Image 1 (spheres, helix red, strand yellow):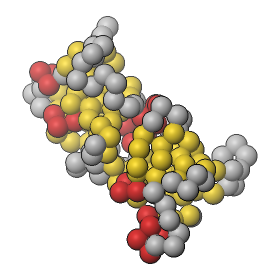
Image 2 (cartoon, rainbow, N blue to C red):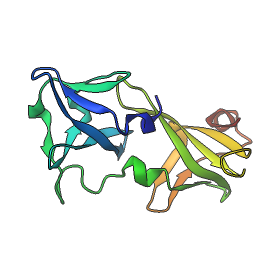
Image 3 (cartoon, rainbow, N blue to C red):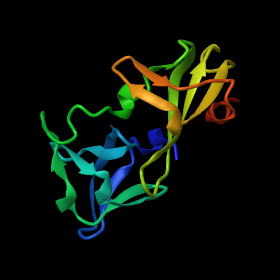
Image 4 (tube, helix red, strand yellow):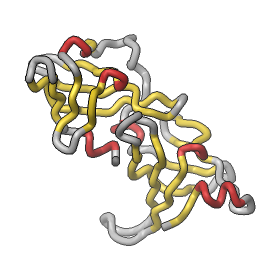
Length: 167
């Protein structure tokens, strides 16, 4: 599942049969690289739902057991300072040899666990047409910074060749 699909999906409380609000961003934990929480815009307030409280990522909505699983979004809180999808999709991806692979285009998740499975970087093209997309296994991610995401890629090693495939 592309993490960007979550933006705008509605959070539904199963116990109260109520809409809690739409997802406005996805919060990631970088060690291990997985979804840590979902940021939600509720009625007059923003809150987060820890991913371990998500019951199901459905085709149309995300379900939680009850509204009691929500946490207020606050500065200095548990999820403050963790990278958000909106920030990650602006990063340049560079390999450890100093080669620009492209801009991070998508993050694919395992919907059951929230673990990141692979990344896709894109370089070149005009208005989204043309260019080269590179699929990167999550195991190749070395570091996530404010401006860059670095990955280990070594074309001479069969393991690394499977890690970054150009499509």
